[in-house]
Every structure is written in C-alpha cells, then in structure tokens.
Length: 108
Image 1: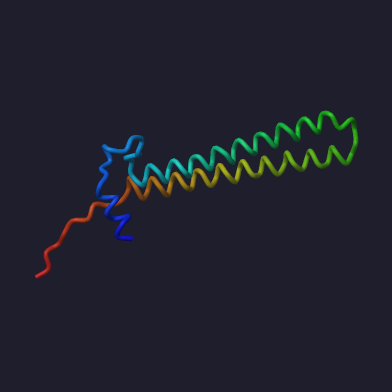
Image 2: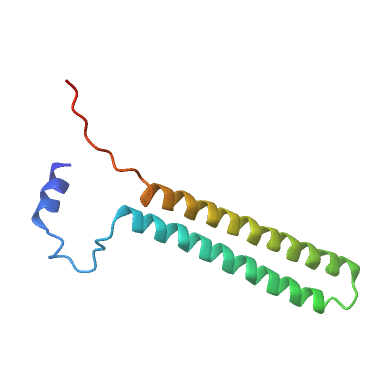
C-alpha cells in the first residue's frame, strides 16, 4: 500500500492527460443520466421491433398478442423511467442546490 501512495504522490494532475477534474456531483449525474439514456433507447428500440412484428404478423393471433404485450410493457417501462428521472432530478436538485447554509454558532 505504501508503494501506491508513493507512486500517487509522484504524479500531479498536470502530468497525466485526460484526468477528469469535475466534482463527484457531476460524475454522479453523468452516470445516472447515462443509465436513463440507455434505458430509454432500449425501450424505444423494443417498441420499434414489436411494432414491426405486429405489422408483419399477418393476422396471427399469437404474434399479434406478443407484439402488443411488448409495446405495452415497453411503454410502461418508459413511464416508470420518466418518473424515476423526475424523482432523481428533484432529489439531486434538492441536495445540491437546496442545501441550507449552516452558520457556526457560539456556544458558551
């Protein structure tokens, strides 16, 4: 462990290129927003594929039912993801922007 500490002290952020210097808040928001982007893209892709299956089912009741269920559940997933996004944004904004300023008090 002392070796890692020694090696870390040898380098400064200016010595190593492409080290992000953002805050933990920015990193967390980036990860959460990336997750929501992937989840939204996946849900839309499922809706597109299920729509294709629905249109090419040629009246087959089994394929039509499966495609309709896939569209329904993907739409529910989008609504749940949107609600989670809004809740996350509300909570993170409340934590980051709405944190009250604490004034030191004198106890005597």
